[in-house]
Length: 214
Image 1: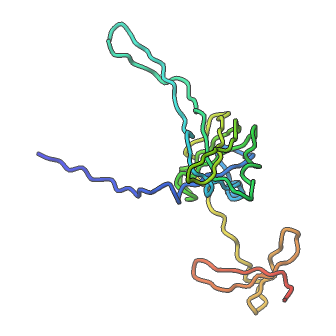
Image 2: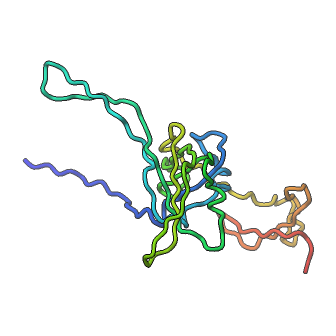
Image 3: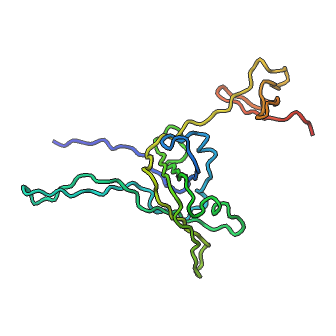
């Protein structure tokens, strides 16, 4: 009698265009990077040409015994081999080079499945830049430079992507009858006018202006 196994459906994807690589000099809690920390991080994704390493490995311990000819083993120490990122070199900007100087310490954040809130797909590697060097070639290829990193502490793997921050709408009771709300303030505490330009049942699009008409 034959039995059939139900095939599990997967949403397979290509990492290019989905996965993201970020650089942060400091994190409040490396196990749970916040939405603000991810949003304000220095983005590396678009300049990356190649990536190597960035994986936690284990050095198993062999435990052979006299009762068997099979060499059994048990888990040993975890380790992370040297990891690297290769970047395209920008002819006029050195923004990445200034971030990833030799000896720089920080965190490389990998969003494996992209910025998908709730997905447990964030890997955080505490690193120090060991070397950064340009690669030279006479071939028909773009100029590049390579950054080698040492992993300085145990990485945090499979962390959740923090929820997205939704911008609050102006209070309805602050509406002056012309679509302008005066209940919001900027970072300096000054009032900011908000015009509601479109709404639906679930969201609204707002536009802020400082009250000075051109």
